[in-house]
Structures are given as structure tokens and as C-alpha cells.
Length: 140
Image 1 (tube, one colour):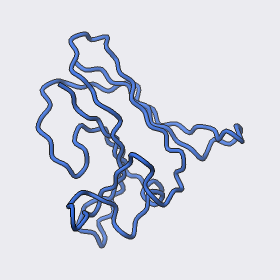
Image 2 (cartoon, one colour; image 1 turned 90 degrees about the vertical axis):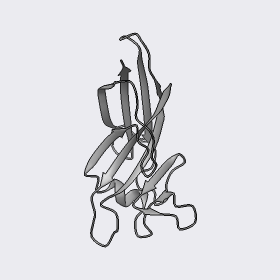
Image 3 (tube, rainbow, N blue to C red; image 1 turned 30 degrees about the vertical axis):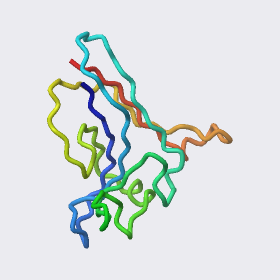
Image 4 (cartoon, rainbow, N blue to C red; image 1 turned 180 degrees about the horizontal axis):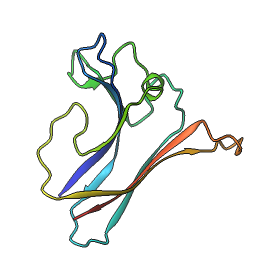
């Protein structure tokens, strides 16, 4: 049995919104229940362009809903870059934002969570431009 793990970058901005926050999220991958304590899995995502106004491939938005499909989307006045510029909280969750799932029947432990700047290929001396989220997890 597996469960998706998402990272959600949250900006609390209740003013003028029906939602308590706006966020962008990425499904890092599926974790599996394994019997051995030493079974670690590494999940990661790289944000290639934090100034992007549109959602990069694989990213979702939350803070409004599509009037036709009712799926979560970013509000019309928010962009990927505007959410990243004012992140208040980083969440690692098995609940993909805006969707409902049943409960997980195994424990999940996170270890060595890293948020780091990655140098741009052209300018190694500048630690800006891309960010990376790296997470290792162990199930029990």
C-alpha cells in the first residue's frame, strides 16, 4: 500500500479570499509501508524558476477552485512567484491539497529535510535563482 507525499508552500493571506491561505504544492512521490527500519527513500523537487508567474509542470495551486471541475487552483490575483515570495509555512503531507483521502495505516517519519539554494549554472558564485527541496523519509 502506498501513499502520495506532497510538499505544500503556504502563504496565509485571508484578506479578500474565501480560503484561509494560498499555496503551491508538488507531489514528491509515493511512499510505501516497508517492514525494515533501514529502508529510506529520498524524495526531492527543484524549483528551476522561482520568479515564474505560471505554475511549473507538476505543481498545483490552492486558494480557489475551478468553477467547472471544482479542483483547486490559484486565485486569479496570485502567481507561483507571488506565493513563493511570501511563504509562511512549509508542509509535508499525505493529503494532496484540495483533495480528500482516507487515513494511512502506517507511520511515516521524516528526517534530514533540507531547503537549499542551488547555484545557477552560469554563475556559481551567486546562490540564487533556484531552490531545492529535499526530503528523506523512513516508514515504519
